[in-house]
Image (cartoon, one colour):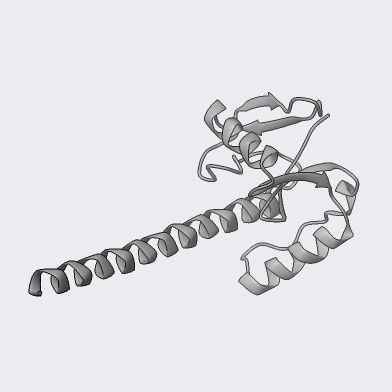
Length: 142
């Protein structure tokens, strides 16, 4: 009887620790997303930083199949991850940069009290854009 009770408590503890770990992974992923949006705001038309691995410089161009647009990333691994996210309707998507995006980015900028001024993004309206969690992270080149 005591063995069965011990086993149940052990399983319960494992489940709790697993849930806590999953929450931390999600929290870490959202932090990375924040940095990719900050990089977009800091260098909107430059494709300077990789939107997937946000600490890396974007140094390689990759063409998105069937669309003909070029994305600038740090490596082919990031390209494969982004394509997988786009094709499975997950974290990444592609769309046209619009006024709602500017409003969302301005709100994001104000909420986080970023140390640099909000850039003029009107010049990019209509450009195809890579989105991560529905926020722009890189303007694509045709």
